[in-house]
Image (tube, rainbow, N blue to C red; front, top):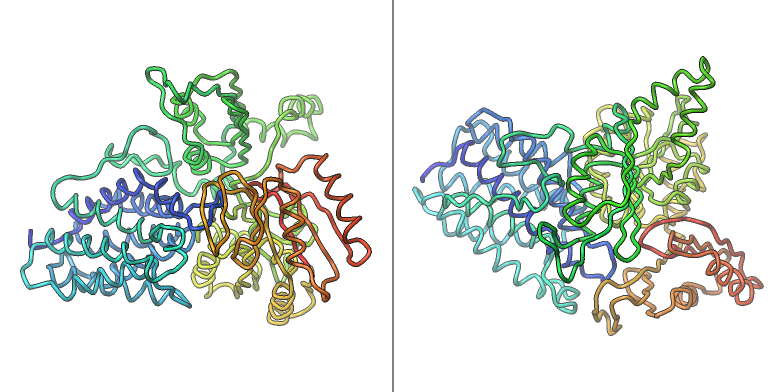
Length: 584
């Protein structure tokens, strides 16, 4: 084939997205730090899935239209740095083919050169040895080797082969990759997409692994899009109520699976819940998994879950009906009591949907949007008069669209965004760019929850947005922030050896303490954070910290530090991280 039109490009997109979907857990496992937040594959998969949904119903056969719609879908759903960069790559591709029905080999090479240029342009400080390097070197190699009238499948083969070579070189460009013994995860995700592209051009379209039929991407091969898949968060936040679904699942024997049952993958299971619902509560005790989730299609989630075991209990309530009844509270006290009885036993912890501080209904000049996870952390931000909390963090990066919706929701002339995570800053910047003609949006690039809290503590609604950005930036930069979690694999970094299951503390992007005991690990971290300029220590306890452990921490803190420092021990109830620590 000498020409690439929209119909064929659409097949490539579907194949590439399916190939990434089938392998994204492998991409997640390439995370450099041995912490339970390797989510590059998940972010790229969710981003790519939304792009596919955007083009699935396109009937225009021009490559211009298909590429434009695909780029738009990726742009709004970009999650994490790799997801946002991925969206920039195909935005550049779309710009290059604009107005064209089809492209030849030269146009194909030009499109990927433009893709590379736009991707680099979207990153303030490009880092080599990443997805950026892979797209740059592969695009340049194709551009150097392409010839007029070269078949498109040959062009794609060159691009994919060179991308793999570039991926193999990433450890040589980024020393931390070589030390840990992995290639760049974002680059690996891009290679999976390009592999799917190449296979489609050889009449071998990758099909989605139907081991799970209701997950984060659309049912590509069926030809029908499930309209509830996609930006579930916005729908729940503004329009739908759906079903409160709770169940207790007894997992099948993982060593000897019964017929019809599949091996349980906790990370993928959680990704399915996050993609199809919100207000998620997940807990596991040996072979028992307890789930609470609000979803528009409870049957899909129950069908998916049953692949891994059998239900012990199931409870599904229609929240739309509950909502209607609640509206009649003032007219019918009996109805009110009935609702309380029905809904009172539900334990709700928002973990997927953005939440708004209802106390801030009065129109304000400056609004604050922050990212947080954990009911205690969210409560702290609400007390600091934050207007909107987008739920997310290390293991769940919000999309560009989540921030766009939040900006629209608070509807303030001036808006401050606090990403509180280095992997979310690009999505915030992208949302600010989208909304710049309507709102004055400033992104303060906080990388940790504690930095966001420090910034909010100095906010003054009577000052201008520029003065607030200045003072809030100064406040978060003056805060020392550390965190404690557990290792998900054996590794060695900066000469520090870590075994799977051990507790590790991270300070300034380095592992500074390793211990089998989480509290001993915490105090090792504190010793490294404190100096003669320190005055205040704040410890935010995660959801895994027991009452007994809090008492032990309190006693040890008082014995060791109270004479020299002011100390606060707060209930953050954050997942994944046992402790967030700030020192000021």
